[in-house]
Structure formats: structure tokens, C-alpha cells
Length: 90
View 1 (spheres, rainbow, N blue to C red):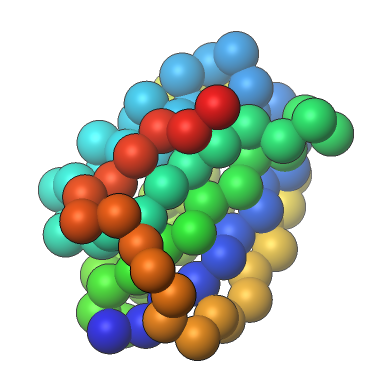
View 2: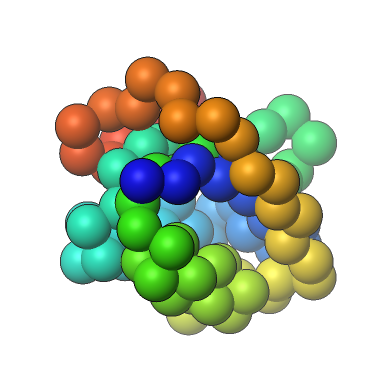
């Protein structure tokens, strides 16, 4: 299992981005969390298979129906303590 941190920039707050991200993560079997950041971006820490994380990244590149994704920054993390499912955090 791999872990990745993604920061998504654009119009990603106030457009149900976290809700759709959680829904996609559960569909793909990805664990972790998503949360809004004070700078207007959204951060997610995700763990799963390489294939699942690749599909998750493709979702993040597009975003929720009302979102506009300008860019996604990604970095690999050592597998940390992740929730057993996928959470929306404040």
C-alpha cells in the first residue's frame, strides 16, 4: 500500500469537492482524509494500491461537477496512520 498527499488548487471550496472526493475514494477502496485549507485549496492524504491512487489522481485532476481545478500538487509519503475508511475533516 502506498500513501500520497495531494493539494488541489482552483475553485475547490464551496462546490462539494470534499463530498465527491470522499465518494470517489470509497468507490476506489482508497483510505485517508480530505480537508479544506485556509488558502482556498483542498488537501487530501490517500492510501491504497498504485492503480487505485492513479484513478484517484485522475478524479482530482477533474474535480467535482462545480469545481475548476487549476493544478494538483502531489508527493509520496511513507505509509502513515490512516483512517480505516475515508473521512472529511474540517
